[in-house]
Picture (cartoon, rainbow, N blue to C red):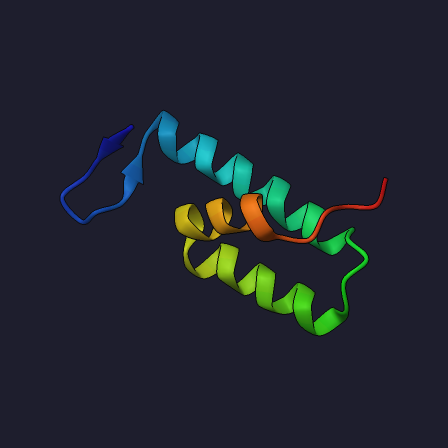
Length: 65
């Protein structure tokens, strides 16, 4: 992944990260967690796209089966 001078991810890496974040947000909305917890998880993924996604991947709510 290419990093630009502002610390952001650009190009194909940015598109992949966007797709992963959208997947995380859809999974958060579909989870069995309370509304408050869903909002907090969603904010984490939106405000910190890469780090928030990684934290969600390890510890976040799972979608309904």
